Figure 1 (cartoon, helix red, strand yellow):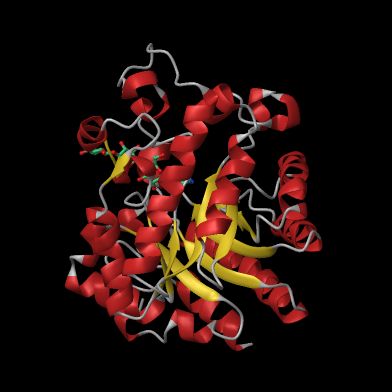
Figure 2 (cartoon, protein in one colour):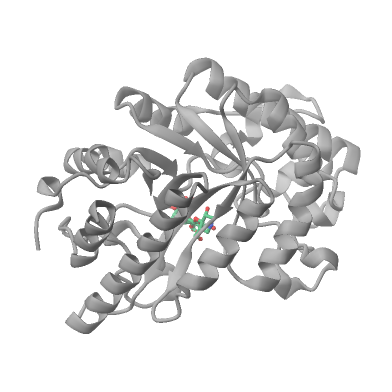
Length: 351
Ligand code: G3I
């Protein structure tokens, strides 16, 4: 296997079709060799955690501020990654403004109480907090780092068929529990008002290829589209070998695009629990056929803004922790070599 630092650039190869991105953390960019790998192969980056509400919201400063409608924010982690992106000329996705997960409990509570048993703040206050938060983040990012962020994950993972709610909404999310569906248009309206020209607003979700979930997502997005509040469908793309169904991904991508949405694949990885020869070959085939499908869609004129891997090398994938077994899901090995799957993906671009 070749050293990935000497491989042809992945993002240059895909420039005619879509950006190639990777999720990363401040820890990764502090490693000079990894930083070089990132700059060589990726034309878009996403923070894996540092731009989520729990990384940005600050309880002590919020309490000191004493305004029940306005939480205080701390941009130290956000700025570290935006500085890296700006200094290296790499575009950035902002992940994520609104999510049920990694949002501190106190953000939902009366008097900012840091306790799940405390009463929730009234809906009207919660929506004001949400709008203020979105405005603060977007204004800061656009004022201090103009031109760096090209797309915002406004809402992440609002549909969950397993929870059986009306519209297949994720009813156990505090956002649904405390505001019903009202946070959805409120978040997208605040984002639209504060977006810079050219920035796209994205709805992001996993298993977005599954027909039942896909249809529920489309039903949720239609009224937002009618108000011109959403631009892009973010299909996360956490797949599993050998179940990856490339044709279901294609069908779903076409369905979202038929609504007038642009597309992004925001969190691509293919869980593969062994790196023996047979598994490596299966991973290579899976990546080859998936990228061939995406290239074909781009050539047909579907607007694909980016395909982003959820991690740079296997060493920093979230999957071994989540699956509690080994995982070799990305194109670059833990020791920073290009896998055969990497070369296959490059070949698809050149064909
Ligand atoms: O914040 C603590 C830190 O204080 C502590 O030292 C450390 C020790 O393990 O844990 C830290 O929190 C972890 C956090 O990542 C930051 O590293 C959490 O335990 C861990 O659960 C969290 O996992 C993240 C996960 O989202 C949380 O839901 C993953 O890194 C991140 O890759 C993952 O990303 C999500 C996307 O945002 C949305 N789509 C699914 C995707 C994969 O789950």
